[in-house]
Length: 284
Ligand code: GUN
Image 1: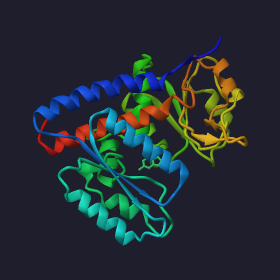
Image 2 (image 1 turned 180 degrees about the vertical axis):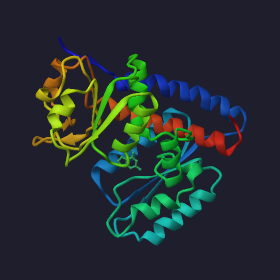
Image 3 (image 1 turned 90 degrees about the horizontal axis):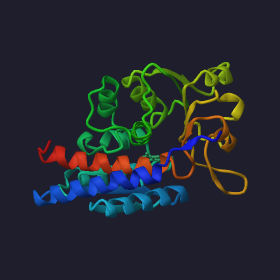
């Protein structure tokens, strides 16, 4: 039997409609959520992500600004721009698209964003809040995964949740959100021994590795829920996830790539932006 496809596109459309309605309500109180997106350099994938974020802003009724800096920009120039955006009351959220050119320290840039405008939830203070479980902003990709699980009535409580990948953006916060929902969480990475055995014991398997078709059918327990965070290109240039498509035949639920986690990530960014606008205007 084939797994149920967890439709991130449909759920995104639903949540964006709710956000649009909330934006209309905020506008009657004189508040317009605003997002500034910064892109440094000409990475093609980043350009597509930024375009999708702008489109989502317009769908949600937000004000948005795009700031494009050349690949040769200095850290000082970028920090100056962030300082200006931190002070701009039209801007509720600031997102600096990663990766950055190597002359710029990502850590310095993340630290420079006002934590109240840090809609990526990358700033140390927001990461700390997530760890404690008392947060303003949820990290967008893991939050999108949690929304998908909720939509399909999949409760992580008591389940063995295996997260493959330990990045600050996805793997680590993903593990934390599953833990907050009482999952029993294992984080695997490139140095993990017996990866196949651990994956085989997963009730919920989250692949956030960044390698095309890394998780194969022999690594998946029949009936497991499989979440594919990957966005890779195979040899023919086709977009594919971290999970081999034939896992569909083993899993009970699975996210497709594209159309699973990807659209949810951007929708969660919109949720964080509206939250930021409310926080900055004392609206609960
Ligand atoms: N690059 C890849 N994913 C992300 C993300 O979620 N936020 C930012 N700022 N950059 C990214």
